[in-house]
Image (cartoon, rainbow, N blue to C red; front, top):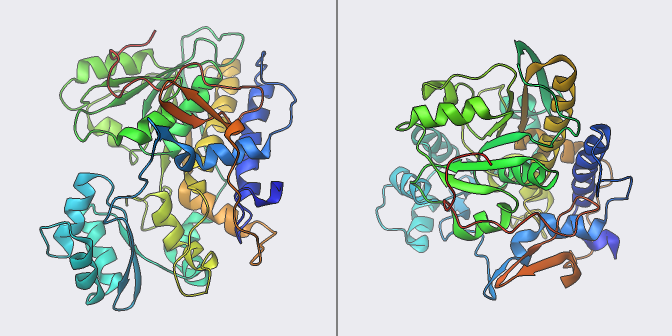
Length: 409
């Protein structure tokens, strides 16, 4: 049964357990006490955490993971994979196909007459999210694919600036984390740090609003506040000066472009789709988009033609855990020398890790659903239990989006 959780052609369960084990090991190295011990990672709990969108219930209602214009569309030269869950991404997609009404059938007919390669480039120009579905061989030979295979899984770079703060005993006790991320990888990272004792404050601009179920599924243990970095820079700078860790999903230099100054000794962690190298470094993307670009859609196809997918948003979740582990290690190192560090991870680099991993099984059984024992219910909200061993629940359920004041405890 264990092998059936997250069952796929690619060794998804292996990726998932490796990323959770990376956090557990980093926590042990940090000298953390309490629930984090030498206990083994539980594959069912890991699978439940990775497939949390399928277990999520709000008043008995499951999550609707993808909007109507998110998915695969047949184009004139193959498949186009789109992501339009957020209204602004949907509107930009409609713009590049020359439509105004978000009707999937009409969009599909239009895309069928267009080149996926041409639409991919048009999307990149306007900030829409769409890629041409490639084979694995095409991806590995491409400049973005080569860039994604370069360097470590998570890159940590030491800086010369030094914090004036006195190190704490347990690495995460009293650590303040400013979480400026959305969707999955970044929020999973922040949620993990909160589970291990950090004070995590997630900040969002008021517009666009976060997708409701998505926030409830990844916001446990944190507080959630609204703050526009462009219009309230003094408050944003104050919070940044108080933070030990900044986690963002922005491209390099974006925070500085808001006019904000990075305090000395800050652990600056970033996660993005394509990494910081290569021609796609500045492009937007999501887990499903990376799967399509990297050839995973075809590897997981049931018939070798129809687009398939991993049994969970595994690139997102795994990248979030790997990033959290690297942040913990960076905090340990900072406690010794006081220096700030940059920590960077990308979904495309995690995808390369998965593609390179041994153990493909094209004859795998269907993925088995984790049992109810891997979930926890608070009132009308049901979510997956933590994947990190030793914890049965998060410090508290997700607060309503934007319901907290923009301040640390």
